[in-house]
Image (cartoon, rainbow, N blue to C red; front, side):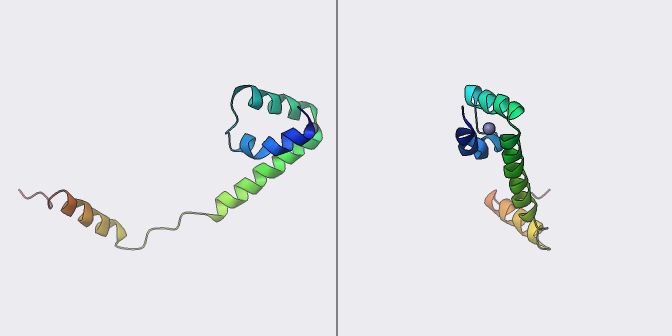
Length: 81
Ligand SMILES: [Zn+2]
């Protein structure tokens, strides 16, 4: 596997989508190739940035109660004594 292939597979590797032989090959390549290790590191950081930017916003007030209400209705109304 050459550096070009590693870079093509970097996204999948970082996303843990690579399986078996591919994953092992990328893994063993980056232990020997500082350039590709840096590349993977860069892809990883880019991923982390995306993830932290898509932070879950707190649910608007009352939303949880609304959802419960909808769920209760779907079940045929809140149970009564
Ligand atoms: Zn390389």
